[in-house]
Length: 138
Image (tube, rainbow, N blue to C red; front, side, top):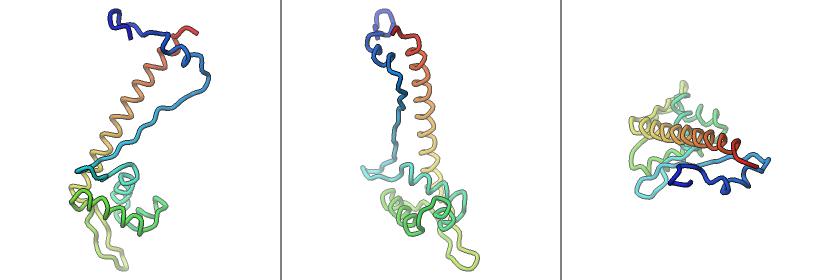
């Protein structure tokens, strides 16, 4: 960008303007505590499924994951966070049920907020850039 005139240097984007191929910008986010991974996309999907379904068993079936995998993933989240993220009820004929703790709710809400904010920002940046590319000389 030419800071004096506030204009974009079109030569920088010239090759991009000639390309017919579409491209996609991607990103990954995760939450850490003390340098340890706490929650990423997969963990957020697990917590959301538990919140929606009310049990680890139903959540694992919904996600196509084994009960053991989901159980171990939750234990890993809790270990790295240092707090429980779910309250487990004992099983039985009617099943025990599982709900998110306040910490689990806050963690999931924070992940969703950050992910949504980044998605919206990226969309807005990509959209404004695509208009610039359309106006670029070829």
